[in-house]
Every structure is written in C-alpha cells, then in structure tokens.
Image 1 (tube, helix red, strand yellow):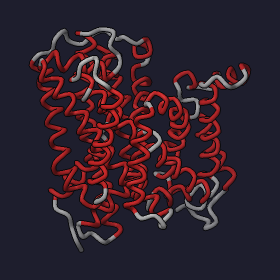
Image 2 (image 1 turned 90 degrees about the horizontal axis):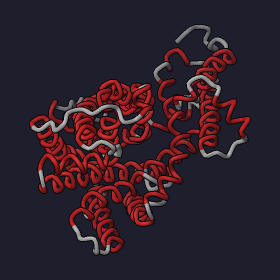
Image 3 (image 1 turned 180 degrees about the vertical axis):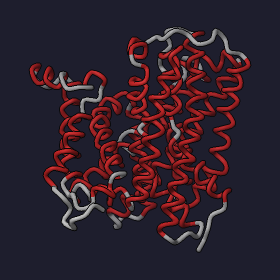
Length: 440
C-alpha cells in the first residue's frame, strides 16, 4: 500500500492553497480590515467561517462522498448534473477564470505605463500571454503539485510575508475606526457575508478532483487513502488561508488608519504597499497579484476540463482545456464589470445551496434511509435563494419583498437559512423512520 511522505502531503496542501488563493482572496480580507478598523478581528472571525471553514468542509464533504456528482445524487440525478454544470461554469469561464486575467492586468500593467498608453491593446496582449502560459501548465494536471506546490506557492507566500513584515516594521497610523456602519453594528455577521465573495466554497466542490488526480499520480491507488490524503490537503490549505487572511486583514486595517475612505481591497493594497516600500512596492504588489491569479487560473482550467471531459468524452481533456482558455480570454476582454453584473445573481443563488448540501453531508450517517431530507432541504433553500436574489434585483412586487424582509435573518443576508432548516425538518418528518428499522 503506497503511503505519501510528509513532504508530499505538504506539497499537496500548498497546491490546493494555490488553487484557492486568487484575486478575490487578495482583495477581500484587506477590504474587511479597512472597513472594520478596530473591529477587524471580530469581522475576520466571521469571514474565517465562510471563507476558510466552509471551503475546507466542502473539500472534506466531496472527498468523503465520492465526488460532487455523488453528493448531488443524494438530492436527485437531474439536480446533480444541473448543479454541477452550473457550479463549474460559475467558477470557470463565466466568471472566475476571466477575472484572474482582468484583475491581474489592472494591478500589473496600468500602474507602469503612461496615461496615453493603449490599454485596450495592452489588455488583449496581456490576456493572450496569460492564458497561453496557463494553458501550457494546465495541460498536465497531474503535475500541478510539482509546479504550483513546489514553485509558485512558496514564492507567493514569501511575497505576502515580506509585505506583512513591512507593515509590522512601519505600522503607519495604526488601526483606524470602523468606516462601515455595517461593520460597526455587526462585524461578525458582516465578515461572514463578505466571505462569500471569495467563491471558495463553490471552488472547493470542484477542486477535489484535481487533488485526487495528483495523489493517484504519486502511486496511491486505494480509494480510502485518496480520500484521506485529500482531506488532509484541505485542512492544510485551510490553515494557510487563515494565516494569510489574518496578515492581509492587518494590512488593510493599517491602511484604513493611514488612508481613510479607501474601502476597496485593491485600492487599500495600492495605497499601502507603495507607502511601505516606495516604488518597489508597486512591483511587489503586481507580482503578488499575477502569481495568485495565475495559480487559480490554472487550477480552474484543469478542474473544468477534467469534469467536462468526463461529462462529454468526445472532446479530449486537452480540447476542453483549450476551449475554456480561449473562451475565458474573450470574456476577460469583454469587460469584467459586465461579467460581475450578470454572474453575481447566479452566485447568490448557488452559494446557499452549496452550503446546505455540504452541511447535510456531515449528517449522512443519520440520514441514511431518509431519502426526502436532501430533496426537500435543497428545494426550499433554492427557492428562497432565488426569491431573495429577485428581491435584491427589485423585480418582485413590493408586497412580496416586504414578506421576504420579515423572515428572521433576512436583514443580515441570511433569509434562506430558516427555509433550509424548515426543509430539513420537513424532510425528516415526511421520510419517517428508515426502512431498515434502525438508525444508521
């Protein structure tokens, strides 16, 4: 029986961290620090739950269930296929992959060219080179541990640590007061909700397939061992995320004190890092963004190509990878603002469903034989998420919006939680006792 060394297990954790840690992960923690100010650490406690805890649990849930499709089948085979496709497209070519190129371009090119530079042409050339290089790496998904885990992740961590040490040596004005009323009133809840925007809980549902592939490439064939090492990789990646988020939140809180009014994470970093390091700070910031976005881009192309090759094997893995890289490059140049405008409502629907699905998986031991719990819970969660998204888009009648607003936790952005709990209770009631006549 093949066993992996501690070093290889560490590299697998680095690889998964690299696949998680992209543009959103860089932007949102310092943004939280800038907005929360002296309440940064309560806010980060909430963010740690949604941006670290849930993604780790997602990796564990999918690994223990035998894959996202098997987990979704507990609801219904049709739901499994639809939800899986939607999840892959949402974090793939429809949003997250194009965002890696657009965000890294904004941080790496405009600050170093003059105001008269043809930014449109430069963006096309940059995205062409960015996706071409990402595709070359993605064509060998079983080698990601060697390329991301051994090389890219340590470089990225070193650059972030250098930035953090600089903020300790020169703390500027210290933490500022909370700049957001939402953070001042409920920092933990607000941090939890802002953690959604990293999209890592959805990503966790699809990254397991690549980690498992890398584990098998190391000679591990036993399914139980593959699951065990995948889970360990998830926990290690979670620890790294938590430490890095804490560093970035501290940097953001300092920025809020020194540059009040800058609440966007990108602006926070753009203000603070050059203030700490001078002109080299801009180069340091650009390198951090490019490496982080590149790592995530590679991981997402691999994951999406693996899944769609399995779903439609008429196209090879390589063909799917080329297709996703090409489509993502086109969308990246079409404008990120429009992508976010179209995709954000979809994410607000997918996220609660993903959370409910992950949560139920950890109670599977007690749910065996109670076949209606998953379908009813996911149905009510999904309906509630759709209704609240429609309310936010202002397409519902005022009377319906008022009713939705009266649901407990709706004001905190968690209006779907009560319907999810009602669905679980109703599913248990309708299922009755397991047919085996005993608890499993």
